[in-house]
Image (cartoon, rainbow, N blue to C red):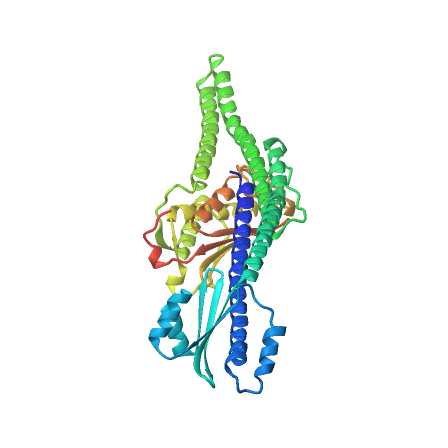
Length: 463
């Protein structure tokens, strides 16, 4: 069953249940009201009858008789009984004669009044003290008005329930269609979107807040998917080029060398070319594998408690070996007094690789100008900032810097594959951190790394 039909049935069921409950409520309390009203009328007649019949010496008796005979309409099957309250045995006989329960007279004697209902016939009795003595005055009548009113009320309520059922069913169908109309429109639009027309978006109309949030969320998802598709296509294109270029060079050099006999020096030169291209191919392949591994959330890496400042000094030592004469400056002005505020949960080799890539890029693209590395702490994070005075990155290209193999338009004269920064970001993400890059053309680049502080309760966790 479709959700639209389910909602229509639920709405219809709840509405009908409420209507039936209200109808039963009205019928029940109306019946009680009719019964109570008829009982009050019988009590008034019992009092008037007692005063008109039993109070012989009262000067108001003629007036009660006139009211009783001329102004009180006789009720259907109305009867009056007057019994002196002399002995309980006599009352029991009267109860049997009138087919009344004995408790009727017991209540009448003890409480002064009593009521009994036999189908639609109502008996109302009261104890009356007159000049002749104490009497039990009983008035009975058939409540035909009650039956007529109840029958009429039943017809009205049944008709109302039938009409309400039809109207509720129509409203439920219209309501469910109205509710799901935006969903149907969104579904129809989504069916039109495929990998060939990923640029299409769901139009945001005057929907409710929840539907609008759904449309916005879906469009954002499409934005991410479109970016992912573009990145994937760019990655495949660049990877193919980066891998095929050294392979082509190796194959070409080997074919040329083997085409005829050559001197030993020529073979040596050819082997050197093949070696250089093979090393280049090995670097690209290893970088791609490392990039894929760090971008896979399911890969587990052992995490230890390490000091962020120690990583900085290790990176400095590595750069001194790889790039002698570099101008790396380590700024410790913001370093905290407590060593505990420098400890992070991470993998030493991965973090070393990530920061080394960033520092290496800073040295390369600044022409070996000063590169400043600062370290400090916040409430929950260790902050590492790498700032250079190099060529920077065009502002329009900053959004592409994490795409594998992407290289800014002003880096053509520098060697590189465009994998280092995406790899560094993946590693920082693996550690629950954030990497931010700000750059200005010809003024330098600033890279900020934020890593969560170490928490003792998570020391044995691996991701």
